[in-house]
Each structure stands twice: as C-alpha cells, then as structure tokens.
Image (tube, rainbow, N blue to C red; front, side):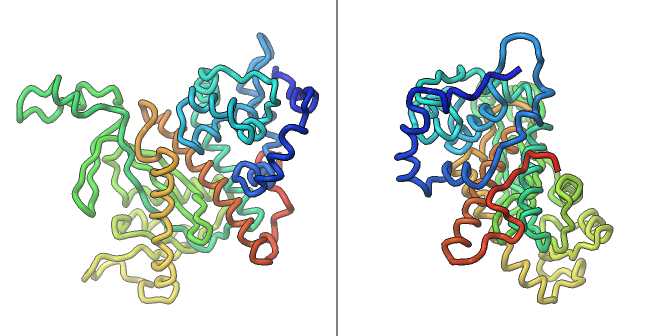
Length: 363
C-alpha cells in the first residue's frame, strides 16, 4: 500500500549528513516539533483512504509533513516541494534522505482531496485532545472570536465585466466562481468583505486554538458559540468552565449553550446595557476580560505568516481544509513554545507531558 521509508537510514549518507546541521539548529521550530510531537500512528489512521491495488503511495505521514511545511511558510504546492528539496532541515523533517526524489507537487493536491476536510479536522482535534491530556491546556477559560477571510474571487473584474448598472446589486452572486461565499460586514468599522468567517475558541494562557468553524461571511457571530463548544467537548473531551468574547457574541443562543453546560457566561456586555449582566461584576469576569486580547494575536500571526486572511481555494469544503491545516500549524508552534519556555524557566514540563505528544496513537 505504502512505499517503504527506509531510504533515510539505508542511504549512503544516512543520518550523518543531517546530524551536524540539526545539532547546530536544535532550537529550530521543525527540530522541536519532531522532538516533542510524534506522528506515529498517522499511517494506520489514514490507511482506509488508500487502496491495496495499484502502485505504492507515499506514506500519509510523509505527505502530511509536506503539508505542514507548505502552510508553515505559506507556500504554493510547487513552492513547498521546492523548499523541501532545497532546505536540509525541511527535507530531514519530512523524512527524505539526501538522494531521495520528492513527490511531484500535484501530489499535495491529490492528498488533500483523498483525505477530505473531515480527516484534517480530525487530525486537528486529536492534537488538541493530546494537549489536554498532557495538561498543556486547561478547561478553565475559552475566548471566542471570528475573523474575515476573503474569497478567491476578483471582485473588481466581476464588477467591470458583469455589472449592468448602479441598481444591479446581484452581479457578484450571479457570476462568482465561489458559490458558497457571501458578503459580511464588520461591526467595528462597517467594512464589508466577500468570502468567509473563521470562528475559533482559544485557550488564552497558551494561545492554542481548541475549536474551529468555517462559515459564509453573512453568518451571525451570536450563533457560533454552540457549534464551537459542542465540537470541542465532543471531539476532545473538554469541560469548558468560562467563556469570554466581545459584545458581538451576546445573544440567547450563547446564553442557552452556556446554561446547558454550566459554563460561566463572561461575554462582554454592551455599554449601558441592562441585559446579560449576570456574573459580569465578578472577579472571574474581569480576569477573563483581561485575557481576551490574546486571540487578536492569534489571528494577526496567522494572517501575516500563514495566509489565513485569504482563501487559497474555491468553496467552503476546501476552505475548511485550509483552516484546519493553518490552525494545526499554529498549534504545533504554540506547543513547542509552551514546553520550551517552561524548560528555560527551570520549571517542570506540563505534568501530563511524558517527553513527546502522541496524538495519533489509539487511546
């Protein structure tokens, strides 16, 4: 079914050529990820996506590592394969020896199609669950927020070619290549965009993203708390204690899901509001409010470095794959940061952390 991955150890140079470089760059992000996060079990987890017939395929673990490189450095499929081929640490991280040929860049697209969004979201959830089991994150507080994603559609070109007159307001919906996208409007400045929203729950102490949901831009923020909370609790076993967010998430649906799960509703109320004020004068509310700003750094970092602000693909299904991979990369970065900081400060690693995370092994 899969190609053997023994060329790395059986090649003429073996590990000898990589070791001096890895030793000199022991704090490199990819070196730390490979040191502290195991991908053992991923091949077995994804084996049902492959056939026993035909030519042997590259191992799913190898292809997934290639995708991590792609989204870590915000590269196209072609650029990702070139980077892995020419960067020794990237080549070592993916498990290729110096004399190994690399898969054609189109294989990355084939791999994404083969797995589909459900598998990538499952990989994301398994990593979050492993963090919780290792006590890297706690259930104490989650911060909810959304950010805009522009669709892969040239609005100016559509306007120039298809807009009939000033009263034609549907020319984009009629002619857009992305039929799942819609218009959204930011409540803070009234700015509109065409595309999607990425909604998340974030552990503010570690800035690890614990739940994600991708939706058309016209969806309301105050309806997103329930699917995010249900997704995290069902997929990772969390029992969230407190929920914080800005006033856009106020609403009966948010209050209802918090009440059903005994979650403290610390959503920030509107100024001069006389509604939704229960518990908003407590110490817990003020602590949660002060921690809320951490989610802005999460979005800023992923837009600047990993392409979160704009869709790579057409359609919501492929955009969900994109977001699952972006936030998986983000979480891997945060995991290594948390462990490294604790070690540098002379603290013990998280009490449930046994030296390496194994998110893909059967429980």
